[in-house]
Length: 138
Image (cartoon, rainbow, N blue to C red; front, side):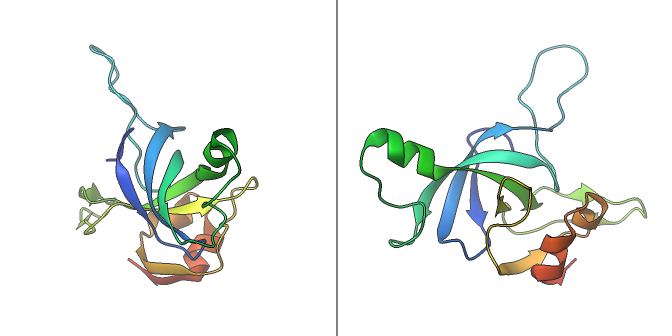
C-alpha cells in the first residue's frame, strides 16, 4: 500500500527518476474507528512531487521557487506495489519496489516507454495505453 510521503520510482521516460506521493485521490481508508491515511493500490491515481530527475527534463530548473514547485507536481498512476496483492483466483502478486507512471490531463501516460513489469489489474482500471507500452504484464 502506498500512502502520503511514500517515495516511489518513476518507470517511464519522462526524465523523472523518483517521486514522493503528496496526495492519494481515490484510495481506501478504514471504515470505522480512527481516521487513517488513504492507501493507494495498483491502478489508483496519486499526486506526486518529483524529487530526482535528469538535468534536461521538464522537471528540472525554473526561474523562481513558485515555478519550480509548479513544474515538479504531477499526477501519476500506481503500477507496482511492494506489498502483496490478492487476486480473485487466490494467487498473490508482489513486486520488489513501488513504482508509478506519470500522467497528463487526460490520464494518458506522459512518456512513450514504460520500463519493467506492470500489474494486470491496470487492464481492469482502463489504463490500456500503459498496458500496451509496458515491457511485461504480470
